[in-house]
Length: 117
Image (cartoon, rainbow, N blue to C red; front, side, top):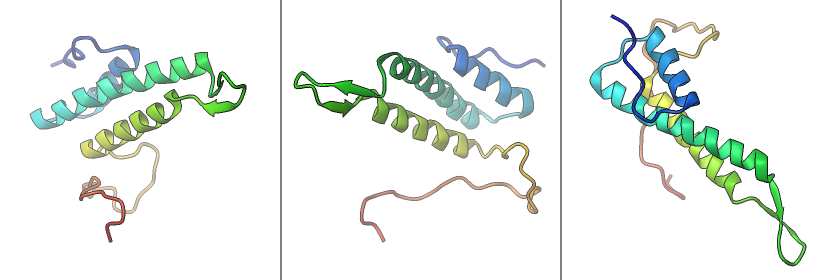
């Protein structure tokens, strides 16, 4: 059985991610749902990175001062979101020698809030 088609509307980066993951791993239904979200996130990261490269990291205001392009924090947030989705899939890191290679990797869990101890 071949690799299922990438989700409708997937862009270049999303299709690449879809193919690379499903070319190596068999995923359950709930994992495919996470992968679909990751495909959309990968495409969003690609689009934001292209727009940021085109407009530049720093922009000039009307008063002549410099400010960070608002796309920069959006790209950072999108990249973090993508990374979290990929962690949820628990795919082993390629090329990393690990003593516990046979053990299942655990994703990040818990509630995240500022000031939580």
